[in-house]
Image 1 (cartoon, rainbow, N blue to C red):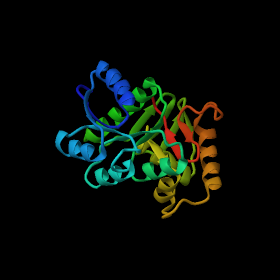
Image 2 (spheres, rainbow, N blue to C red):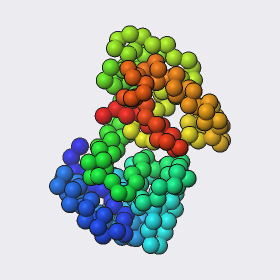
Image 3 (spheres, helix red, strand yellow):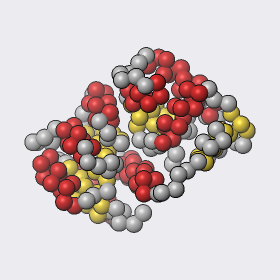
Image 4 (cartoon, rainbow, N blue to C red):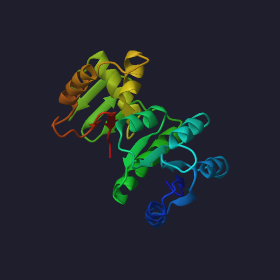
Length: 230
């Protein structure tokens, strides 16, 4: 995509050094802020395209930074945090973070997540409305409402179809249970997760060649689902 500018808001020098060496080697432009207030200022003045954010900052909780950024921008946000509590992940994602990487992490994993966010930016910048999506052996034609797996048509229920389109629209991004219930069923709060698991299991059986090792619809345990398309 060319020169992508990434803002890192992180106070751990070891993590900063680890990330900056690897990201600069890949040609990314970096701005590093070691506190929340400094990070918000950098966000406002430097116009970054991707934000990598630690939740445990010395002055402001990262959750509050997500709230402030989402009031004015749809910039892709990747959370990098030592917090493993599902409640923290869910809150961050529900507020608008795009992804969540738990420390310690491999640089390969973070780079893969960044590449997904680059494609997210490309989609946002494109003025062409896609109607046909091709992912490996899966093709989704939204104009004709036609789904094929290895060129064989698959019939989805209306709910399964809405679920699939929601995941594709957010491909690469973790979609939480509450986000799914809001968008698909119109609930203001998450409903029965067992009910959702049944729908997702049915969708996988129809789309995946091996639903035990899904290619497309991945489960983020306790948090939600992600449509993988790399």
